Length: 186
Image (tube, rainbow, N blue to C red; front, side, top):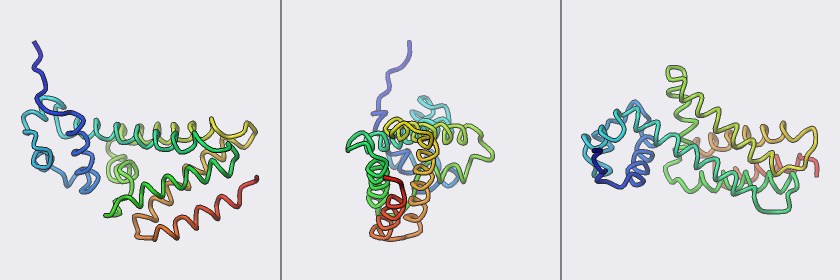
């Protein structure tokens, strides 16, 4: 008979995400996560098998949240190219600005740190980027440029995230996004 987990899995994954995001994978130990979460290392090992197993669970959950953020941002509005772009980019900027420590994006940070040695990180990142592009494309008017515009907006959003990480002001990020939106056909 399997043992019932005696901790809140959602809370543990939230805490693990926060610690991995703040410190990076290599600089984080299971002891760090156990201390931050109040969940014992033996319970974490029993649930996830290893630090890597916990990281992948937290990473996949984080990436799903990024897709949900984009999907929610583009689900409202008038459906024009400019409106969709404006809403998506504003949601990304607002999300970045909500991080007082300017830690960027766990997905982008992890791809940079881990993807060359851990192809599953690159795969999950690619799937996430593809899902964000699909979420945007599904809302765009159907024409020959919808795929390219969706990819362009996701790439631009990732650039804005990196600019935020470098300390660029929220005002400047929004100005950059407005300039990109203004360049789009109506």
